[in-house]
Image 1 (tube, one colour):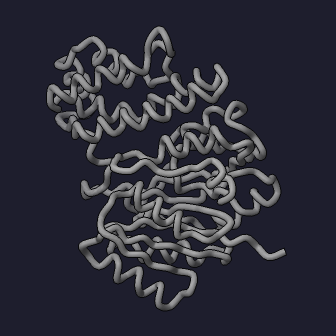
Image 2 (cartoon, rainbow, N blue to C red):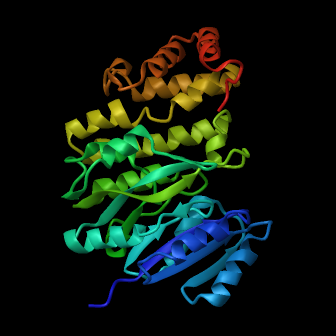
Image 3 (spheres, rainbow, N blue to C red):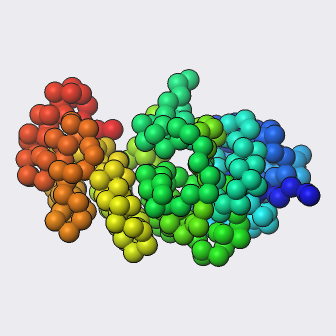
Length: 333
């Protein structure tokens, strides 16, 4: 039987220094039945020209240009343009590892699942590492499971290390929220909850680049708008989990998944504005309490737990002292 076509949506904005490597990593995959949809989101550098060169020489590449609308809306445009039976996403400053798509598609062919997930490495310069939760989630291959059987996989809320059946994506009416950062979390949380079955592979399939030039969204933690978006997307994802999953899954969500990225905001908090401080304190009060899971039961490393306790207790100066004792004068991410 002919292989299914995999549509890879690549949103791109001002990534002229990275797009070549990203597209080469996709186009040289051993799974060759691809269409690559590059959606240029109003770049002001030569990003669109780089993509156009590939589109002119490789029939698998299509370029769509538009005014700047943001990442969530851009991904949605790419999905609408995609024609394949399978769907994947790649951010334009990252790389897809060799053999990634073949491993994920082969898993779907064998299991009949709605989506397949691989492990991912964080790339900083020449160094590659894996987060502890990513390592724990991808220790071994599991096939045909659901979210109540593997609740910790809710921590794997990234769009880019997965292949989805397009029929499932459409059936679940999945879309990325627009005009908000961290749009992956509610969308992928919903995908994992809605999926009747999914696969998880130990294979490293994706390299997520950490950019140290301050240009990436993940390096803007000290901004009130960034924290507000983080809380919004956590709130949306939490609502999905509370409505659609078993009690043990919900406990795992509050105790292990939801707190994962808050420590970065704790580090920024001492020198941030009063508005930021109160927003962070309100976030902890909203998500961890008598009606959910007390903060004391959250699975946090000791230092992060201490920082959280100081935020709750409104002890900003003490939080500053704790962070300085560990990191010197560098209080921000």
